[in-house]
Length: 348
Image 1 (tube, rainbow, N blue to C red):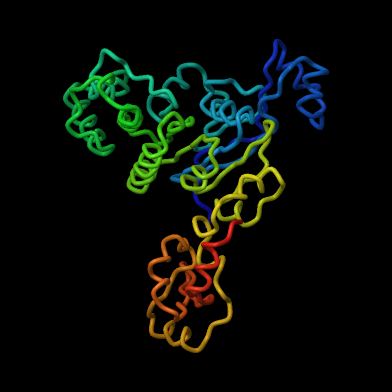
Image 2: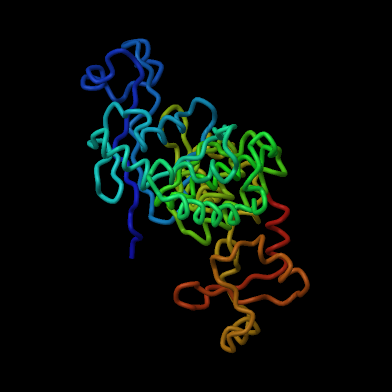
C-alpha cells in the first residue's frame, strides 16, 4: 500500500531571463543548458523535474553548488515562480494560488529554516520563537506556552530571556528551528541549515532534528551539498546536476546502485556499514543452527536493520543470526560477524 503523497512536483522548469514564458513555449527540450543560453540568452536553473514526497518523510535534495537544488525547492514554496510545471500539496495546486492563499499557506502549513538564522536581534529567544504565532494573531499566553514547549524540545530550556547575540551559532540555529516548529507546520523546508556550523555542532544539530522528526513525523524537505548529511537525514534523496535529477532513491538504493558516474563519485567514500541493511548484505543460505533459532524466534534480526546498529551485537560471537522480513516475519537468510566485518572494511 502506497503512502499518502504530500507534495507532488510535475515537469518543473525554471528559466531566468527577460522573456522566460515565451522562450519556454518554443524551447527544444533536448537542448543542453549551455545551448539554451547561447540560443536564447536565458539560463536554465531547473529542467523538467518531477518527483513526489510522501507524508511524514524527510526528502533530501542534494547537489553541488549551481546544481539547481535551492531554486527547485524555492519553486515548491513559490518564493521563486516556476516558469512552467505544477506543484501540488495535498492535491491543491500551489502554482495556481493567488497571493492571499499563498500567504495563508506559508503562515499555517509551511515553515522554512535557512542557513543564516535571520533572528531579530532586539527580541529575546522566546520572542523570536513566538514570532510566527504573533503574526498569526495567537493570544500572548498561548503563544508563550507553545514557544516554551518547543524551546524545551530543541534543548534551549533556561535561555528564553537571552538575546541572539548571547548565543553560539549552534544555539541560534536551534532558535531558528524552534521558531519554525512553533507554528506546528505540516511541511518544513530546510535550506542547508547546518552548513555554516562547526562539524561537531553540525552533527549535534542533525541528531537533534532526527529525534524531533521521529517524534513529530512532519514532511521535511532538506537541501544539502553534503552527501554524508544527505544519507544520514534522508528517507529519500534526489541528486541534482545541471538543473536535472540524476537519481532518486533511498540512501541504500543510491549507495548500492548508483546510476551514473556523477552519483558514483558521491558514493565513493561512504562506508557500506553506515548505509546498508542486514537484508542487503545477508547470506541467503541458512545453516541448520540459524533455522533452529528462527523456529524458536531467538536472535532474529529484521532485514531493514542497519549494519551500523548491529556491530556490537554481532562482533562478540561466531554464530550466525537469522534475518527475517520486517513485514511478514519470514526467514530470509542469515548474518554473522564475518559479513559485518567485511562491510566495515568496504567502501561502496
